[in-house]
Image (cartoon, rainbow, N blue to C red):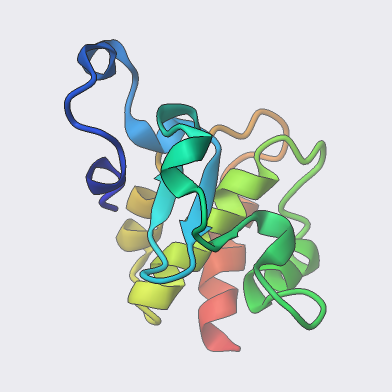
Amino acid sequence: MNCAARSPPTWPALSALPPLECFTQLLDSDDQLRIVTSLILAVEVDGQEIITVEGISKDGLSKVQESMIDNNSFQCGFCAPGVIISATELLNNNPHPTREDIKEALSGNLCRCTGYLPILEAVENATKE
């Protein structure tokens, strides 16, 4: 996924940071690309519409959120926002991803309690709905 295009490339501190996918993310409502929130200043998105995990669906839960619940993909919920945003971006750009595509899209999200299999299965199931 191309988060690098969304962060300022001239900041010297960026070269010392871990992969961009490791941070809290939002979706840019225009192009549906993830925005890495710890690498962007609030003033840089002033006046722009952004979507948080709470706003992914205007009517109830999104198909990704429902699939995560149906597959018991989360326990503590720490990873849920990043996983849901990453999976939503993936499915917006690739409605029928392979398992490798899903793994790549979710690669920067850390889950410490459920494990990754229920999360992968939930994304796969969301493509079938």
